Image 1 (tube, rainbow, N blue to C red):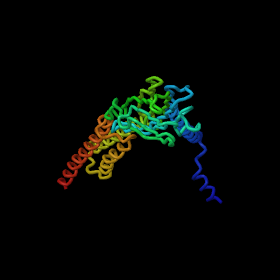
Image 2 (image 1 turned 90 degrees about the vertical axis):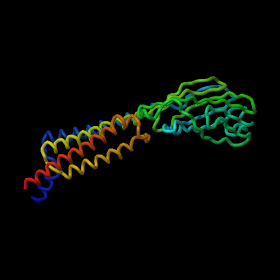
Image 3 (image 1 turned 120 degrees about the vertical axis):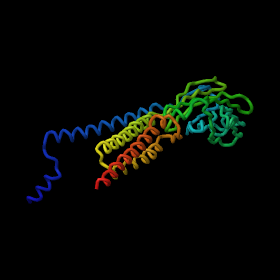
Amino acid sequence: MANSARNSAWWWPPAHPRTWASMVGAVLLVALATGVGVYLSHLDRGGRHSGFGAGATGAPDRVDIVATVNRVEAARNDAQVRVFVTVVGKYAKGGDGVFPTQDLTVETSSLSSGELTYPAGKRIVSKDMLMDLPGGDIADYPFDRYSTTLAFAATVGGEPAPTAVEIVDSDPGFVTRATVSGDESEPGFDLQLRRTRGTFVMVWLMYVIMWALALSVLTGALVMGHRRLGMVWPGLGWMAASLFALSGYRNTAPGQPPIGCLLDYTVFLWSEAIVAFSMVYAVLRGTKVEVAAQAGR
């Protein structure tokens, strides 16, 4: 019975006010961090825009176009946009919006898919097209921003038709800002695309971690050299592991930016250089100490 009481007292924390205060504080800190994370997540998603209306949105007979920005390929300076078309009013066969009464043609501002065609009486299916992103450079990652113009014009049976366009922002790595451009005959948007808040948070965290790790390794090397500790093999192993860990960590950057972007020149290459210098410095100083010790024997 006494052993049981001792075992219970071993795993249960002592009833000291500071201990309980620390435990409660830790729980509250975790809860606060979780709540802030949930809020930032909703804020990031709330910053996305969908359902932008441009063109003849109130016309009884019109062509509706929903353009979804599915994926932004910053390295290739283009964006994949999925286009789904429906017809309303007299342009729809039997009141069904996916069967046009006459041949339907949609002109786009895309350089890869300038014209989308839908035969009369055939079911309309979604089609993908690529939009060029002339404004922006991935070398500025993570502060790179891109711009483009997305515009449409529809004809039914060879005659211009009132057209309404909506934009849906779907790429998890970018947020789209849209400004209505054109008129009811050729509605469209001027688009501005930038990295999400989540990407910025992740990249800033990478900045802090890389610099902290590099400076920690440098400090360790200076201590080893100043105290003349010789070849401290565990320390050298830690430095070598840090050198390769930084490369792997850098490759986890959201969006997979290429080598040579702003992230590399401001933190990654410096961190690699500092860690490599620290390791060489520790080896040289350690070798000198070891040789002197061997000579003194």
